Amino acid sequence: MGRSRNNRRGAAAEAVVEAVDGGLAELIPDPDRSRAWTLLVDGAPQSHVDLDDPAHLTFEYQRRIGHVIDLAAPPGGPLRAVHLGGGALTLARYVAATRPRATQQVVERDAALVQLVRRELPLDPGSRIRVRSADAREGLAKVPDGWADLIVADVFSGARTPAHLTSTEFLDEVRRALSPSGRYVANLADGPPLTHLRGQIATAAARFAEIALIADAAVLRGKRFGNAILVAADTPLPIAELTRRAASDPHPGRVEHGSALLDFTGGATPVTDSAAVASPAPPSGVFRSR
Image (cartoon, rainbow, N blue to C red; front, side, top):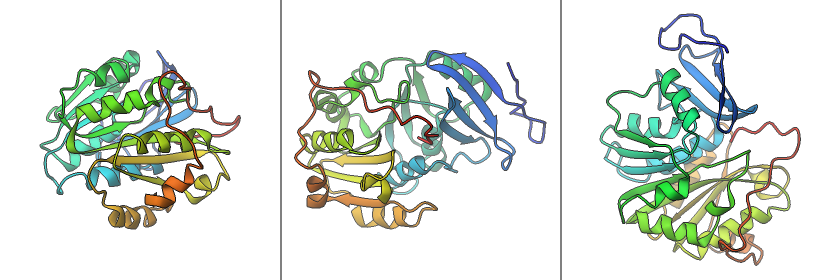
């Protein structure tokens, strides 16, 4: 097993390789940032963390979620957030760095991964982040009614979102835990013919008054497998600002909403627990940056 000296700035860093519940985890040092690391599980990139600059988001999908986080409350203001899926705790660290008074809960089923991340990429002692090792839906059930201003779902098992996190019943639990003005954001992955993505949009539309989708144009056209960020709320979303921020990213994204997004579903119906299936596995050879 490779070891690292990730807490000593300027010290030589080596990869850390360790078996976790979800497969083989690797922490790879970033050659361009002295205390930054990429987490891979079974060869698929999961997270990137810069311990010196936790507000730096490298992965495309995380930057798009970062835009939603930035617009979920006044800049620097407090936020109560729940993260379903933890990885290297990148987004929880981002919230803590940009909103020091935030209170956060992270639900990550892979207890061995949590231990690895805590040991090798320790959290700032001042951050108010509670990490619980539990199934995402079971952990969400323990969140008090109306507690969360923001719920972020980024849960993958074997590169697929588990079926029980794709249904209307799951979103009922999300809405129960959200404040009336709270927002839900989910990282979805799909490829042609986009059956899973269309179904997830229809499912969210059945439970929330407002929805939007941020994705690469090629993904939306069904040209390639990739990530799409679903945003849902019962109050108006900041569509214009989300659109501006997504368009200005290094890899520009499109924002779809309103009737155009509902038309995109192509008549897909909401998914229920009884019919739910896991999201599709990425095609062989696709090197995913979730």
